[in-house]
Amino acid sequence: MAKRSGDVVILGAGFSKAVNNAFPVLSQLAEQVLQLVENEQASSTQPLIEELRRVIDGPKATHVDEEQRGSVDFEGWLSRIAVDQPHLSLAENYERRALFARVTIAIRQVLLEAERQAFSGTNGIDGWPYQLLRLLDVGRATVITMNYDTIIERLAPLAIWPWYHLPSTWSPGGVYRLHPADLFGGLPPTVPTPPSEIVDPSGKGGTVLRRAPETLRLIKLHGSLDWFAAPTDPTGSTLVRWTPGPAPAEDDETLLGHPPGREPFLVPPDANKSPYFTNPVMRELWAQARTALERATRVSLVGYSLPATDTTFGGLLADTIGGRDVPVTVVDLRPDSVAQHLQSFGIFQVNEGKCSGEGAVEAWTNELVKEHAQATAKHLRDLATLPRAGEAIWYAELGVGPPSGNGMVPSRHVTGGRLVDGTFVLDLLPSGAKVPDGRPMAQLLPPAGATTVAADLADGRRLVISHYVNGPRSQHDTGWLFFLPTTAAAKGPW
Image (tube, rainbow, N blue to C red; front, side, top):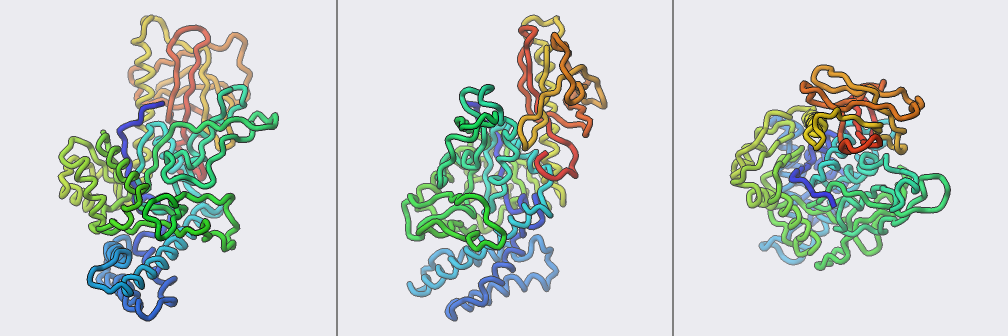
């Protein structure tokens, strides 16, 4: 099993907004939720609805930026109706619980509609989120998210290992095929369970064993749109990640359906989540997040504003990386306020200015792509220090696999390389060209001035994202390099 890296990435609502504008910021979410619940409430909870309207309308008069408007107040309002208040009667607390249940359903409905819009054919997702997921896969990163949406789960099967749909004769132990459940480590369990066999990609019929690749670890601390539990279950035994099958039609009311006897499981971003922490599954997820942060060598807060109401997660950061020499990168529209909040927890090694503004998350992703390209150039040069140093490092053939959602792209063979502005650009045989008998010998040793490795694939230069290169042992040594497109305008995974 590959060792998990010390990279920890924390995702907030700003990440989802960066992936696609269909996802609401918190102020927009509050207004859409209000529209769904304000006309269907009992008179006893009407004052709370009116309070939410004041929360939303009040900051508008002060010209507060829409990205920030009402964010803290809405979270505080949501927290107050989610947790029993000691000064209220039993009946009043029950009424608030009922309101919170309706608000939870409304939040889920709004975000499901946002996902439908984001993933529709007329809108679509840009290329960089797929690049980011592949990077996180290569590094075996831990991803901690506060988001309820299922962006990561929906994109991961397209971005991670989609090209390893090899014929079973090539991989007799099974075929790698990622299932979203593989990201969770079994917590919560997915119902129905992921398939253990898949259709044989060789086209010969029958099935082969599905092998789950080692990949990033996804920890969702606030629940998810597809998580459900019995409302009175304190044991966590009924909490499941529910995947009922193919996505329903856009007008299908079952989109909001539930597994039998269960309700949506969304944890409010409040300062006191104790009723939810009686659930052993959630306690274990928070414990795993703690372990990941304690072992972290690098932490990135991506689109997460670290709201003042979420003192639980703030306390987790303070207890795990506060006072430690761990670099923290804030990737946000306005990172300075997040950096100041981190400093209040004793976290001072904060980079707040490198990735900011509207394109912060995409710019951060591009930096990570470049970082991996640099690592590969160094790795290839380091091969020269192996035994038999002094001999030219040659490779009988080098398969270059630009990833494709439709399967493994036929390998292209390196015929040489050239230095272009600090990048070692690999020249390849034309697509479909027959490899000459005897296998062409290609030298793959970047010159000293090369800091990154890329391939010239005719449709645009592509930076390397991962590599597997054997040391020089025989004429039959081979290696694989996988590349990602650098064309930002491209839609879809590749």
